[in-house]
Length: 401
Image (cartoon, rainbow, N blue to C red):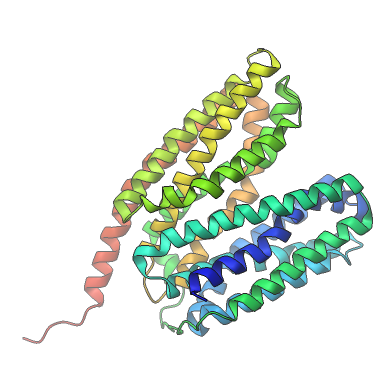
């Protein structure tokens, strides 16, 4: 089996359980364990913060010892963390398990990127990454359906079954990753070189802002629909289907158009424009119109949002691969992956404060943030390219006279 198919199989194996986890975890923590919303929010936020800090050293570990073995270890660790949630009975233990989960998940995502970079030729990396993203969304959709069944049953046994399913999925992913050929380790004497790469840090910061779209569908849009529109709340599930189906059907096609850094920068710029348009349309859904018209507006907004998401993802993948040194993909992907953890940690607070607090004006502010970040990516990438060229030139031995 080709590395591309094995990577996709591993992605599918754990994404089904992840979909069930995302749908049911909050209610499990609240109803079964008995945690308050504040405790849940604090524990998960701290977990992702620890994961963000751990991403870089985990990536460096993958460079020094080979990404395949580290990826397998992290998949097993994630399975252990998910299974440990079943045993949680107190807030203190919940926080510890949440930190283990956040660290393992963030590290696994980064090391998978390094593994992909080591196994797939540069010209095909973004396309293969798009295939994995489409596979992820397909698995999440199946898992979300299973999660919906558990929510309907609303029993301890149903929740525990899905948590164990998620753990089993990560174990299956670990077994699949073992079938990949080993990627040679590339030890480097320079310690955490990415922390001194200011252009790459700026690119990562811009990507973090662009990734603030992630809490929109899972948190902000449901709250907006419930509190600011006359639309029935079940429309949230329809919007989720549109988002998942859009990525599943079109992400690979969008990614194939990105061939090199100029295309990637252009893709992120277009993503900022499309996300601005999506935010403007979301704002229109609360203008006091009929429920049917508001629903139609929300459907249009979601179609724009998923297009912006796909454009952003394709551009960001190409940028993260192309700007990383060949011998430091684990370290650089670990750093770039912190943008996901930071967006998950900061996005809910920022977006709910701005959108739910300021209403339609808040949507415009959020859209303007996407636009500015999208426009800033191209000059940041050009700076990073110039910096890489100077670094590569200085690293070459002087020619004999």
